[in-house]
Length: 212
Image 1: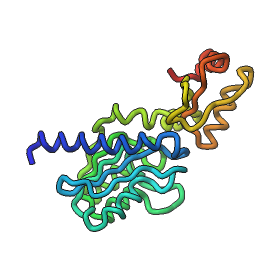
Image 2: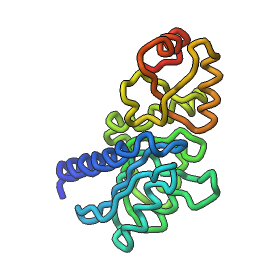
Image 3: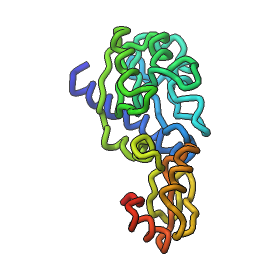
Image 4: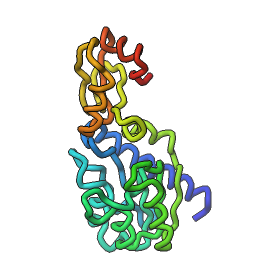
């Protein structure tokens, strides 16, 4: 396969992984929506996205579904596979390693304490070829709320008319302590909230709590 054909295939398969994840946005909190596509000899042999409620993760569904065809395959993952699990269960990086996947292509690196480069490091130490950053801008919408919560402790809030792809609607009095309310929701695992245009949105904007 030529390098141009490989690049074209990589973009196509990562695009599929991103589409799988986008279809689960708003359903997987407190975990981000992740897509995983496993490809062997140019053929998709399995694919999955984070399940509603955040578990199981995409990789721990896609790897068993691939069976023996995971050996020597390429995994396209929209976010860095976790290097450790908060639950103590097998990490996604270990799922890929144990299955014999030879190459992992990742759109975005996860800044959480359970990844933060640890997944990539473990995969590389095990001899897997790892590439990061493919279609990272296209994948950014999947993780902006999750990253906002990691950085600030608060879910992201945006003005929206339908709430599609958001975790929930933010309902509070515009006179409430909005930062405290958002911290509480962040601790509960929410990452992306929406409000309609109006007094509450204006109050959030005035306090620098509204994401444009």
